[in-house]
Length: 129
Image (tube, rainbow, N blue to C red; front, side):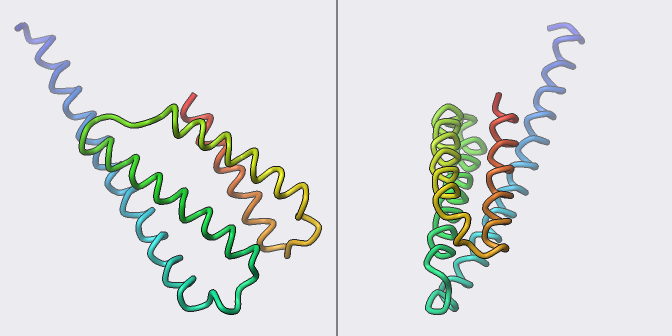
C-alpha cells in the first residue's frame, strides 16, 4: 500500500466519522423535538383543534421515520433513500390535497407551519437527488 492510498483511506474514515457525528447530532435534535411534541400532545390534546392533532401526528410519524433512518445509517451504513423519497413525495401530494381542500378553514399559524413543512420536504427531496 502506498502513501497515497493510505491517506485516502484515512480521509475516508475521517469523513465517515464526521458524517456519523452529524447524524447523531441530528438524531438527538429530532428526538428532542419528538419528545417535546409528545409531551405537548399529552398535556393539551383535549383542547387542540382536530386538524392540528392530525398534523402533529403526521409530523411525529415523519420524525420517527427520520430517526429510524438515521439509526440504520449509523448502525449499518445503509438507509432506505428510495423508500424515503417515495414517502416524501406521497406526503407532499397528500398535504397539497389537504391544503387545497382545507386551507381556507385553517388558522394562520397552522397553515403557515404546514406550508413551512412542505418547503422542508422540497428541500429534503433536493438533498436526495
